[in-house]
Image (cartoon, rainbow, N blue to C red; front, side, top):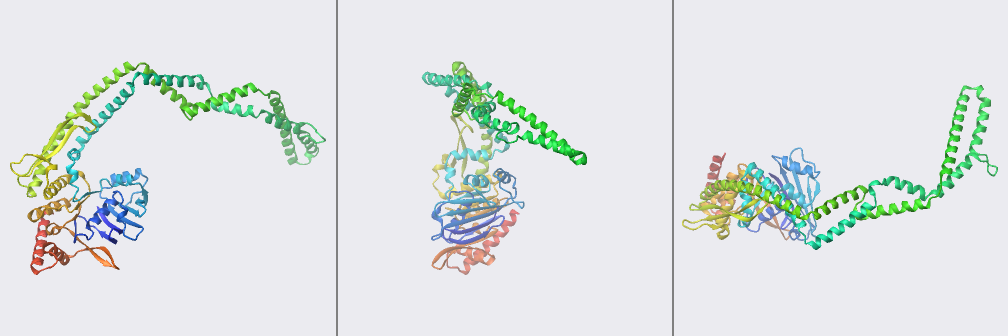
Length: 567
């Protein structure tokens, strides 16, 4: 549920904070006071596209923030975890959006910056906003099948997954078939290219190459002169007396002679003697190893050219087929498979066609089962919606779910579903698109919301002027239906009808005032007396009379009694 809404520098709102409550929250006020702006700000917090035109005049940015309490946090917390966002141990969710005048916007969830797509994935089942014109979604027949499936539960969900998987399998096979049935010219051209690539990789004999050893050998062969010169100098320094310089080994021998002359005077000197003998031995061995290395060292220009050619071939293949030898060989296996497939194209086409035919037979069975289940669900929905509409003073209404079969499969079956309705006795059933009355459309939408509320598990429902086109007794029944929904959901409702406002648990008055020559929206949570005054205004206009106030008070008392029946 929405616990707190903060809005700053948005449209005509300067700085506003609303603390919503559980149950039924109603917002009333004069036209243009900013009620719908409040709902629009919630929509943007939930991930709607930002509109920089709504930034308050003269301001650089608008800041919108919503604090939500998650009564069942498991689903949202799992989404947060997938994005690396910490969940709140007290089950609160804080969403902030900053909208800048240059068109940029920043979204944050629990302090972490997120993309708009991430935000929508997090909030998708958090709040359901129904605006005055949202009934357009009901007029779109593509949405009708989605509404039916909402009622289906786990059984229909499992069947839909099976249909989607089988449809995906068929689509994959059809794509394979499309690739295989290229015209012969394209196929021959592709085979020539594949054959060239296979031969190029095979001729390189990459399978017998140890790339690391090649680079090691190349490093030695390409630097052999420098290696020889350095080692020769080291050998001379170790053994030979050049230009009057005493060699390293001669020096260590002199050291040994000196230490041996005095070692018997102190045991510690004997240790020095042993260490020097060991160093001398190691130096002699090292010298002999260097001499052997030099004797075996020879420049092989032919081998060097061979290595350079080998490395050049490897690098050329890497640029074309993969970053490593393993990737190149893997690519070769793939194109060999493709080449062999093209060689046996007709046989493969027959095989794939059989696969498609068998899968389509299986999908037909699944789609038929799905249709049967949808029809079973539709019968239940027809009764539920009809009952709700009758409660909303549409006594002669007939509501039907019409099924037609599509020519081909889709990932959700082969059904085309459309809602039909007759609102007057004796009239034939017509699509919802033929309904012109805004009042009828509002009641039909409310009937769906009332019925869906027990199935979609969305914690907060928002109704923006759902009472458009209705009044009197119909308005009273609409209010009662909204109140029923609020028993298990948080409801936020904008209304112009006193019958609806009187049934609310919490009543907010949205007003506008001029401060420093600027119009700004203010909000006030009404107490009992203030509610009576606001209901009086809704009943009788600006000029309040004792009669309208008495009527408002009676309406509030009656609403209290009515609400007690819901508890």
